[in-house]
Image 1: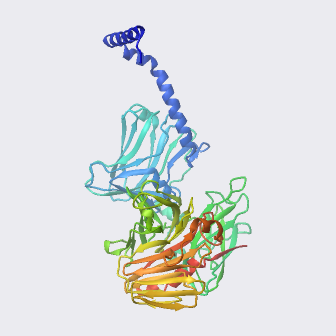
Image 2 (image 1 turned 90 degrees about the horizontal axis):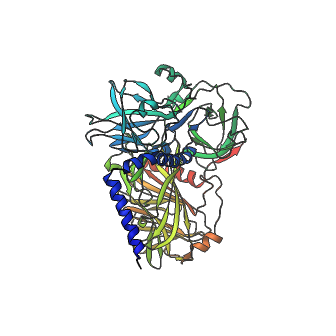
Image 3 (image 1 turned 90 degrees about the vertical axis):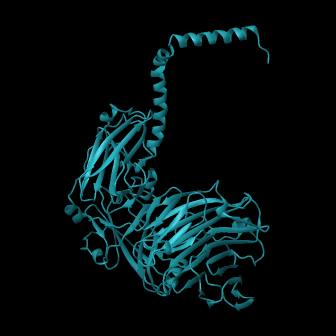
Amino acid sequence: MKFYKRDFISILIVGVVIIVFHVLDIFPYIAQIFKPIQDSVYDSIEDAGDVFKEAEQKGYSPEGGFLMLSDFETPEELQKWRYADVILYQSNQFVSSGSQSGKVEFLAHRGDAPKLFLQYFPKRWSNFVALNFEIYNPSESKTRIILQIKDRSEKRFKYDLYLEPKQWNQYSIPIDDMSDEIDIKKIVDLNFFQWKPSQDAVVYIDDVKLITSQFEDQKVYANPTQTQQKVKNITSQQEREITKTNYSQGDAVTFRVKNPNKIGISNTPCTGVIEFPSGKVYEKTILLLKEPSGQDIPYQIKANTTWNDGSFKESQIDFQTSFKANEDKQFALLYGKDLAKMNFKSGVTIRYKENVIQVSTGKLRFELSKSHFTLLDKAWLDANGDGYYSDNELVSEGEDIIMTYNGILYQSSYDYSTYNIEMVEAGPLRSTFQAEGYLRSSSGYDLCKFVALITAFAEQSFVEVSLDFIFSRTAPIESAAIFVPYSEEISQVYSPNTGVQMDLPVIIYQSDIEKSEVRNQGRKLFFDQDLSRWVDASNPKGGIMVAVKPYWDLSQFGYYIQEQDVTLMLWPPFAQEIDIKYTLQYKMTRNYENRRNQDFGRTHDILIYFHSSDIEQLKTTEVAEAFLHPVTFISQ
C-alpha cells in the first residue's frame, strides 16, 4: 500500500483537531447538540420494536384502554416470568379475575433478594398512565413486597407494597410518579422482590397491566363470601351437584360420545370437536358441561375455527368421564351470561425451572429436559396418594429414542445443539409439549429428525407420546426402539395374547401377521395370533404399562423386558432392515380419527402408564383399551 504526502498531512490535521477539542473540552457541547437527534433515532428504534411486541400481546385491548402484561390464565403465562429463589406456578385458590392467578413463593435463606422478573413488556411507558396489579396476601399478618422498575441507564424506581392480610390488595402506580426517577421511554426491568426475608412467604399475583387514560375499571370487588356464592371450587363429588339450570332451546349444544370397547372405562380423557352456531359463544362466554344425569363436569375448550364475527365455530373440547361397556352417552354444553361459573381446580400444573420443565398431574410428576431429549427425563408416581413426590417414589429416569444404522447407535439424548422444546397447548385438564431434534451418534453424526408431542392429563398417571421421524435420505435401519427404565425390579410381564412371563429378560415379538413368539433363556414359544399392542411389567409394589399404536403398514414390532427397563421395539432387530424413508412415503396409514392432535402427522402413538399396587394392575386393561380404541364423538 502506498502512502502519499497528502495522506500524512490529513492524518496530522485530524490528530491536531482531536487534541484541540479535547483540551478545550468541546466534545460535551457537541454531544449536547446531537443528543436530540440521537434520542429521536433511539426512540424510533424502540417504538418500532414495541409495535411488533405489542402486536403479539393477546392481552392488548385498545378499546378497553389497557395492555395486559400477565394474567396467569394459561400455563404459557409462566414463560413470561423468570425468577431467582422463587417458585412460581398457576393457582385458582385465590383469583382476582378470570380463573387463575400466579402463586409466588419467596424462599428465605437462599439469597439476599428472592426476585420475580417480568420478561416481556413494551420499553416505552410514556403512552400509559399507570401500572395496575393485584396481590393477595394469605397470611395472618402484613407482608412487605418491593416493586422495582429500572430504565436503560440502571436508574431505579422502588415502591414498598405492604400487603394487608387475608385480602386482595389493588395497586395503581402512576407513570408520572416514576418519571421523576427513571426514563419512562426506556424501561428494561420490572420485578417484585423481598429483601433478606427471615421466612418463606406466599402471595398471589393477578391482572398485571399497563393502562391508558381511556381505561375504566369495571370490576366489582366482592368480599370472599360474595365471591364464593358466584364462583365455587369443586373439591368433591357431592359438590359437583348443583341446581339444574333452566335453559331454552338454542342455549346449548348437545353431542354424543360412544365407548367402542367391550369393557367399561373409568375417568377416561375424552377429546373431540363440536360446533357452535354463529354469534353465540365467545372467549369470555360462560359455559357449563353436563352429563346425562345433569351433573356438571370440568372441561377445557379452544376454538379451532371462528365465524366472521369472531365467535367460536368448530371447537375442541376435553373432559374426563366414565363409560360402561359399549355405552353411548349424551352431553349438553350450556352457554349464556346468566349461568353461574364453575371454577374447578386445575389438575395439570407446570413449573419452568433452570434446566427442566416440571409437569404435575396430581398423580404423576415428570420433568422434560430443556437441553436434550430423554422423553420423561425423570418421573415420580404419588403411590401413597399423600400429594407429595418423595425420592423413593421415583419410577423412571433417562428414557431415550434409539435407532441402529450400520451397527451405530443414534439416540435422541445425544442432540444438545439443535434440540428444542415448547408448550403447544395448555389447560387445566390437558397440556401438550412439542419436542424436536435429531437422532445423533456419539461422534456427532445425524441420522434423521424426530418430532414428539408429549401430553399430560389431570389426575392421570400416564402420558401420551405422538412420534414422527423425518428422513432426508435413504437409510436402511436395523432397529428402532423407545427405551424406558423402571426404578424397581420387575418380577413378571403380562401381555394379553401371550400370557404371564416370569423369567427375565424376555423378548415378546411379532414376526409376521398372526405370528408372535416369546423368547427367553434360549427357548422360543410360538403363538398363531397377533401380539397385543400393550404389555405390563410389574412387581408386587407396582409397575409400568406401555402401549403402541403404529401408523405404518408393517406387522413387526415387540417388547424387550429386563429386570429394570422396558424397551418398546418399534422395529425389532430380528426383522430385516427397513428403509424408513420409503416406508413413510408408501407404507403409511394416515388415519387419525378419534385421536388427539389430529393435525400432527406421526408414525406412532405411544402410551406410558405408571401404576402402584396389584389392585391398580386391574386398571391397566382399561387404560390400554381406552388408548388403543378411543371414544367416538357423534355430533347431534
